[in-house]
Amino acid sequence: MPLEVRKKEKETSQNLVRRFSKRMKLSGILPRIRKTRFHKRSKSRQMKKKSALRREESKKEYEKLKKLGKIEEKSWRR
Image 1 (cartoon, rainbow, N blue to C red):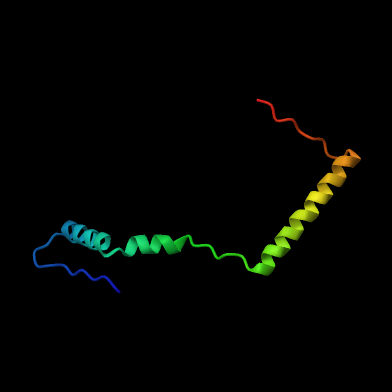
Image 2 (image 1 turned 30 degrees about the vertical axis):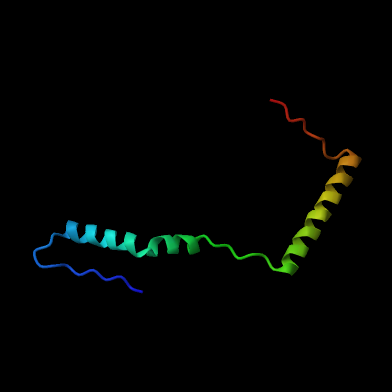
C-alpha cells in the first residue's frame, strides 16, 4: 500500500510536507512499521535447552570456585 502525494499547482513545499505527514499519520503505516522494527524472534526449543544447560553449568562452576575460595562473595551495602 504505497502512499503517494503529488504537489498541487501553486503549493509550497512546506504545505506538501505537511500534507504528506498528515496522510502518513492517518494511514497507520508508521505505527505498523515501528511494531515490526524491533520484533525479536523467539528462541527455538533446542536453543532454550542449550542456554538452560549452559546456565546450569556456569552455576555449578561458580559454586565450585566459591567453595575452593577462588571467588569471594561480595556484600552489597549502601
